[in-house]
Image (cartoon, rainbow, N blue to C red; front, side):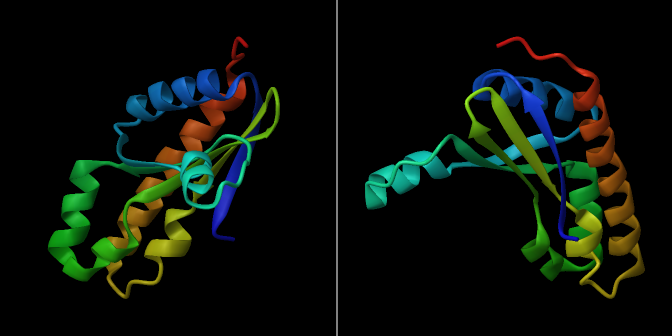
Length: 134
């Protein structure tokens, strides 16, 4: 599989806010964000529920990957999709770093993929324990 996910109850904004806080606990910052909902509305006049793609990064792990295999940057950052399935239900889908970084032949890159996967899994586990206010 290329991803793993969790569904949370709460408003899109509160779930996203909670996600960002938990990511920081794992030393994962957001280096990019795409508001797919706004983009599709602007470019195609298409209305969809809230849908954001976040690019998560740990600078230390990223620098080790790029130093070992400079072109592996094409496999970064770790994407996280936050999307409103229905009002009050938000799905968070985590890219599985093992699946993506596993495309590299580098042992170091593959070892880092395991560490990144563990960090993202801990984020998902922590979110599963949190009650999010609407």
